Image (tube, rainbow, N blue to C red):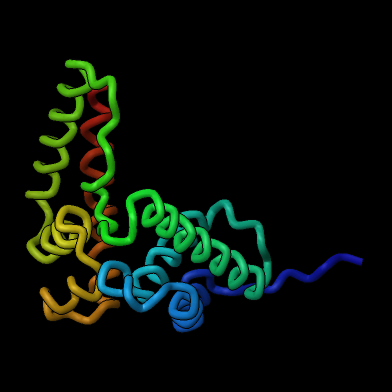
Length: 181
């Protein structure tokens, strides 16, 4: 007997899991660290990761999607805990605090510089709001909550802006690297 596949809209079902993921993150992430990484940030990041891997998701039921999303969230929280333990509780979670890789060669430095220039050029070509959200989240390392306050826009608008910005950056950079290979 063949198992029936449940048909569901991946994006809308994933979005409906957000409150559940926020509650789960709130229960697992101590309040003293919420300034640096809020439960909403964890939930949003988990949703983005699951959505990015939607093509590889093999589940056929909404319950499987919920379980997969929860496992992704738990991995994110565990990774943050490892970072905190590695640097001590007084350190922030900013990636700029991580040690730089050793063995940097002049050619690697040049490649990093060229890549940085290409990304900066692609960022400049974005619309103002998309550029601003990228700067806040990726360069200033602000949480979505802080970015929402700074831009005076609701969180769901910021997620949409970020998605559009990332898609535009990917297209622009893919064109550049495709023409240089």
